Structures are given as structure tokens and as C-alpha cells.
Length: 346
Image (cartoon, rainbow, N blue to C red; front, side, top):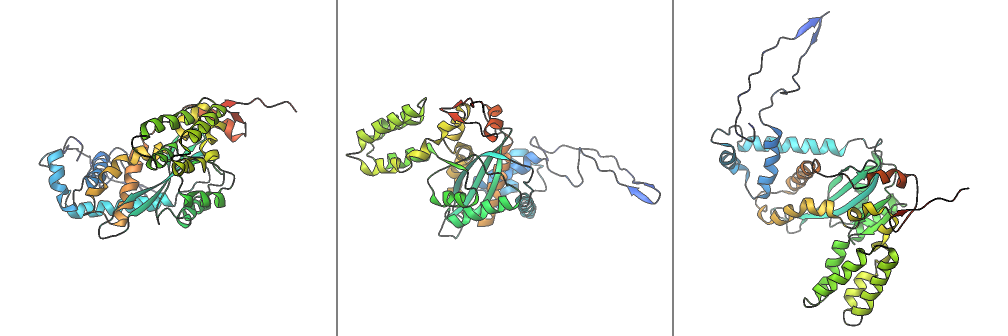
């Protein structure tokens, strides 16, 4: 079964050859044993879940997409595939990380509404960028309201499996749970608050009539060329809106230092590390569609669906711009306003 419908494949029968009483078994790398569906078809199934299609309706839905001969996609087949996906997730959760080093990490909590549950399910997501600038899913687990304990367990598990080098920078929103856990597990990692989350939080505390103009002034802060210019734009925002909208300004000023951390990192990386966009862009469609999944998602299914979607999306993630700068960060070379600082001779 392929994305263009069923394709007939003739596989020659082969007899195992024996030498000195030991059999030599042949396995085709082109067509593995018992393979009946292309990977592209299996990757379609999580998206159908997010469209709200129940297990019993999969065969009808896939027949409409792949043709009337789309066989082998009964409810029991879907249940078996979900079990296989869970096994894949558990193997991924146990993978060795001792040979890996991640320079940047992005953290966020993604919420689902499982069936029959009053509380939303929170899936903790951690994406890392390694020393070659490649982004990959680093951690994914079911948490409890982004609590410190949930994040602590995730970070400790990564460290236990060999992630000994603390990332240079972590990017996330203002959820206190993650930052408290990060300081306990990777105390040397610097913090950068997400400007997308911060902008939304500040504007939500202001009247709608003021929001467009205020958004532009916030944009002037994090788009400034230097930290000095950003500080000046920051002060302008506080002076302009502080009297009438003190609650909105307080949301901004409480994280002033950690909103401008990115100026101490290469300018080529700024567009990557000012926001949690690697997570947000991947889950934008998921968040938009979760309202349709209430009839078919359990907590376990919600977690494994998130895992499959992230692993599928991971293959299309681009490398960081300026990834040649990452070894300099690892060596401890300082950057000011995005520019490498020359070290004085000893």
C-alpha cells in the first residue's frame, strides 16, 4: 500500500544457505519482511486522528484517498499500529545520549483535551540544536500543568541517559516550572524568554485600541541592532505605557534581563533563539485541530500522536543559520551584540 494506491511487488523466494552447520539468512533491505504499507501511509494516520476520524472509519477514509482497494486497514490494524508506535516511543525514550551535545534547547508545554477528562493533558516538549546546528526532538513526555516536578523529571532523565554537557541557552515562555527545574539540573545554562509569548501576555493586559501601536513598540525592542538600542526602546515603552497600563508594563519589566540574553550570542542565531518558534510552528496545526479529537484521543494516544507528528516534522527542520558559530560557543568565546569578541593575548 503506497500513497498512490496498492502496488504489486514480486519478491523472489530464497532458500537459506548453510555452511558448516550454520544457516546464512538473507533479508532484503529494499522490502523488509512483512512490510505491507509504505511509511508515508503510516504517517498519514496521525493526521487523520487530528482531523477527528475514529478508528472504525479509517478504512473508509483511506479508501477515498488511496482507492477502493485500500485493504488491511481495519480497526484491528489501526490498533496494532498504535501499539507499534508506543513501542517506538518507549525505545526512543531509552536512547543513549552520551555521545550528543546540544547548544540550544527550546521548551514548551502543548495541551490536548483527552476524552472524558476534565483537565487538559499537558505534553512537555524539548527540542535541541546540536553542535552542527541540527534540530531534533530531545524530550517529550506527559506532564502535569508544566509543573517544576514534571520538568525536573524530564531533564533528570536526559542527564541520566548521558546528556552531561549543559546547553548554552534555553528558550521558553515564562512558565516557572521549567526554569526552576533547569536551574537545578543544568545550573550554568542561560535563559532567554520567548518574545512571542511575552508580547501576547503584555498586549492581553492592554485595551484592543492600544494594542497595534504597543505591538510596534515591543517590536522595536527585540529587533534593535544592539543591546543599548534595545534598552533605550525598553525604557521608551515603560515611560509611554507605564502610567495607564502598569500591569502590562510589569509583565514586561519583570523579565527584562532574560528577554535580552540573545544579544550575547551570534547575530546569525538571533532569529532562532528569540522565540520558541521551532515548537510553536510544528504544533500550530495540532492546537488548531485538537477540538475535533475529543472523541478518539486518550491520554496515551495523545502522547504517542504528538510523538509521531514531531518525528515526522523533524525530517523537514532546517539547520540553524550560522551553524559554524556553534563550536565557538562551545569553546567559550564571548559575543557582544551578536559579534565575536577578540580575546586579548595572555
